[in-house]
Image 1 (cartoon, one colour):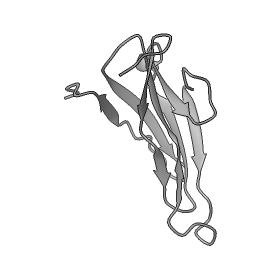
Image 2: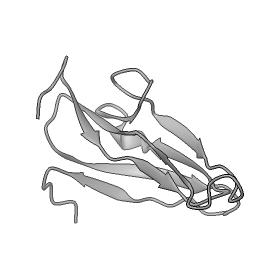
Image 3: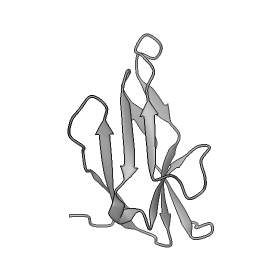
Length: 104
């Protein structure tokens, strides 16, 4: 893991089924050390990104984006996210483990 200006990038692409729109946000408690990296975004990433997949008629298998997550000034962590699937009332709260961090 090479850090550039204290930022480590973990490549984890985003894949959506056709016709899906999803907003992924770094949970409030992790905003001081994590971000969402996108192909053309800033090195530290964003706190929230909305992904919109093409219709099935255009891409039957859905869409995939280059990107991942950024960690600032740390080499591992448990990243809590808020994921809103448009059309669903509830927000999902997954936690991503980086570099063998035990997140249980």
